[in-house]
Length: 124
Image 1 (cartoon, rainbow, N blue to C red):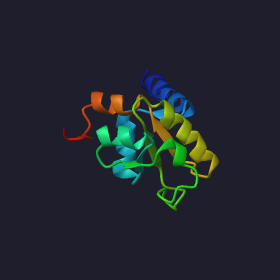
Image 2: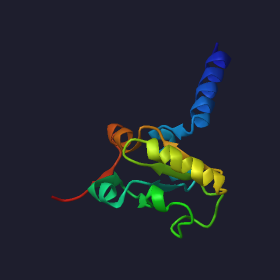
Image 3: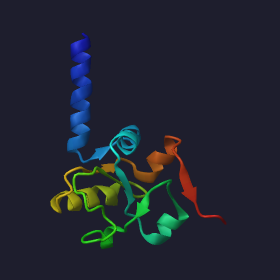
Image 4: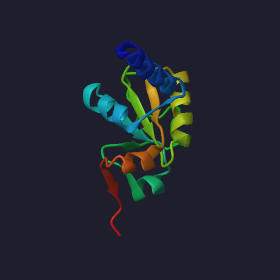
């Protein structure tokens, strides 16, 4: 029974990875244990309004060839945007550029907030 349930958990994890996104808990694990870089691909105004604490802003449109990307392509890159859609596209672009460990946070900043993770907001 334990082997079956462990196998099912592994299968779910692999399915999520193949879909190109991870949950917030896995994102935090990668950041804390694997030294992953958290990149928000939102537009500058969206990023200024709210973003995950510790993330760096590299808008999707300027991602390719950006000097703000880590030079070490083996580092895990955790990508985020407000909903997760642009982050998924960004992960695909970065994997094609040689960043094999680029992955999007499913649900984006909305999921990050829902999980109670820290967000920096623009002061009104």
